[in-house]
Length: 249
Image (cartoon, rainbow, N blue to C red):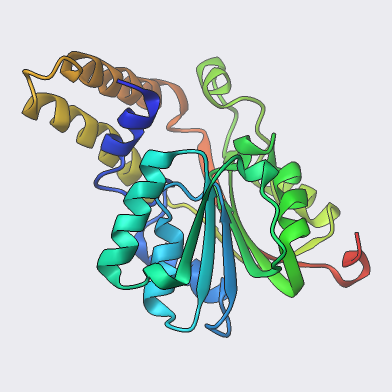
């Protein structure tokens, strides 16, 4: 079973692939879409859940998503058709960092996908290239809430703390106009949902050759979370606008 297949099963019960509940997602979109008729781009959209929710609640909005996974994009197209928003959604299969468009976008989203660009600031640099004047960026990034264990660092790398993460964003020429730090409930619910869904699939498909791998993956991942990074890992979402003196950066 590929990592892509594992991810699809693990997120079956939590389609937003980040530790955010539905209310938090809605609030972030509200702050990112003040008019409701914006053009929206999601860099690293996966199954395009952010775009689908925005399109469903804003009938005058148009959206584009970019991802390397044809499986995820196929699921997104199917969901868009079922919701009746397919005509307002364009999806592109390619590396998000390589995406080029003649259009400028009022909102650029990249939540939990900064690894595709090599980090937080390179992601913001990519978003800036696509941003229309006065536009906004909705970005999600991990941080250390307290001193991480060696196991946590091995899993997630060299993250900054919350204050330093925001300081880096501001120093790069952005002004936060809204933010959300995932709560303990959101963080825990996400982990339980992912590894519970994967374990349930394995138990429900004992004859499948991949069931043993899926169950082992869920067991190992749950243990790494509980013993390694649960107490130190944090997740931050920011809605950003460009600071005026750096608009031409």
